[in-house]
View (cartoon, rainbow over the protein chains, first blue to last red):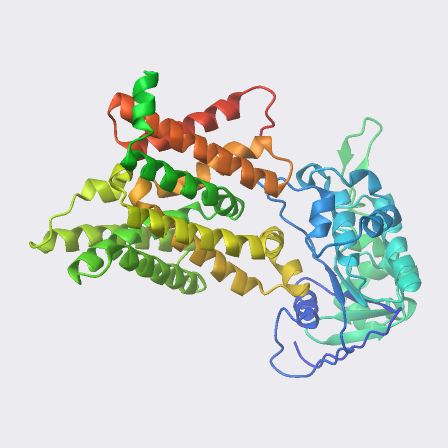
Length: 229
Length: 272
């Protein structure tokens, strides 16, 4: 990767998009401090609190651990504050449930709750809607937007669902080893560099970014493959 | 039978054995839980095997046997941690190589030196009943130290086990914690050699937590219940060994695995 320049302001949502191997996750790991960049500089606001939501988590079934205890691993938190966060994310009913018994989509919200526990100034989300059903995805992005504006925290996220994050994103950065183009979502989706990277299909149907619309069902519910989408 | 039981548990050496065994079982509960959660049982096994080399070197150089076992175990723990980060050989293969080559080297070194006559079986399967008061002191001191360190770092260790990256971003020094955990395992393995022996140490670390899993709702419950199950295994194993005249170390492990099987197949206990 080279020639990367990005900044995130409080309350701003920046979305990283790009093909596989573009360096999205690497860039995020550098911002997180998990990786050191070979060259270049990172300026962080003094005492910046980062909340991180990983792409996925392996839940170790040999460890008995409920959602409440999982959230407490980041520090001793006031129970009322935990309840408030869980309510905000609409998963209060999961509080006493074992982590191993939580579904994939619910687990994403639990991970988001963990990231919010320390009242972050900067929220970093690696494909937050992965494994979440379509209705849930829209709701999740709306929540992230709401959190960002209510708590004034900056958000940096990797997402493939450009059509879903459109309304919630202030800036889109299209990455492929370098920054191909950036700007407002509607600007980026018409940028030649973007079209070049993702092909004409992307402009015809932006749903190429989700994997939920790549087949259809007939009346009996059987999957029929159609190639027009 | 009750009379002989009373006689058994008022004899000095049996009491030493019981104290050392229970002491080990108590610390093995929480420490073994981490070994189960982190899937490190082969790692513990490798450390235990390499302890035999420590014994051989200790005997050759005429140093304090317990001290030389501790030093060699700590050395191998650090060595394994360093080697684990090298690409090219999988951790699994690496552990297998070190476990068996160090065990073999230990046996060869012991056999080569004519001046030393040791009872190899005692080191392989344990000799709990030959525990002296100074052995007991080592066990108590090391186990107290390990428990204290576990207590201090408990939440951080849990957090690093559940998700290392989140823990790191939240300010936990994950690398340091991993090293601490490995050194604690090395310490406990090195003092438990006399109790169950090189070949059986890991089983005492992993069977009680595995048995306790179905009875636990929190990590702490699992650790404490594992300590209880381990202690029961020590008492049952010791008693059975006395009445049936069989080796104590294996009897303890058989007792532990029986409890595991009973709990695993008992209806109503949550299975994982």
